[in-house]
Length: 265
Image 1 (spheres, one colour):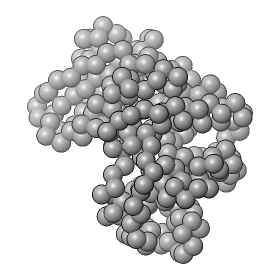
Image 2 (image 1 turned 90 degrees about the vertical axis):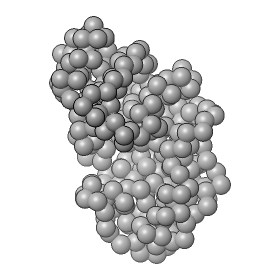
Image 3 (image 1 turned 120 degrees about the vertical axis):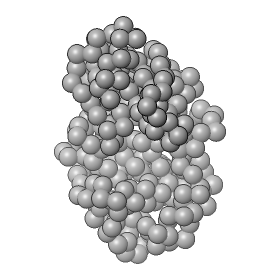
C-alpha cells in the first residue's frame, strides 16, 4: 500500500509529508500532501464494492456545495497483481476529527448550538439529493432484524439520502466538516442520526444532546425504525468482535426502543 500510495503521489506531482492514516482493516491509506489529502483504496480486482469504490466521486458530483465536505480534485485508477487501486486527491481539511482512533466516542463533547444547527442543515440538504445509490438495503433489514433484535423485519417506507457512516471520526468542528462520503446513499429516515447516537452511548451526556437536537427525527415512528436498523448493524459488527465496549450499550438501547430484552452479542 505504501508503494502504491507513493506511486500515486508521483503521478499527481504532490509530496506526502503527513503521517500514515489507515482505514478499516487496512483497506485505505491516507496522508497529507501540502494543501491536499491523498487517499488510496485497494481491493482484490474481482471483489471491489463499486458503491464504496466510486462513492467519493459520486458524492462530489451530486451533493450541493452547501454540504461542508472536502472537495475532490483528481482521481487515478490502476490494476496490478490481481488488485485494483484507486487514488483520490482531495483538499486537505486542517481540522482534527472530533474522535480519533475509531468511531466509538471516548469523551463527552461540548459543542455549541451553532454546530448542531449546521449538522442539522447539512443532513437536511443531503436529504434533498436524488439518487439510486443504496447505503442500506431492505434485503439486509429483512435478513437481520430478527437475528440481532429479535423482532420481525421492518418494512421501511421512509427513505432519505444520507451520509451512511455518520460517526464522530467523520466530523470536525467547529466549524463542521463532514468527512468520508464513500458510503453515501439512501438510508432509512433516522439511520444517520441513530448511528451517531449509537456510537455515543458510552458517554450519556453527548448521547442525550443528540436526542434533544434530533428529537424531531428520533421521536417519530420512521425515526425509531431507522435507529433500530442502525443498532442492528452495529450489533452485527459487535457479534464479529468489533467495538466490544459498545455492545452492552447497543443492546440496552435497542431493548428500550422495542420494549423487550436484546441479548448482548
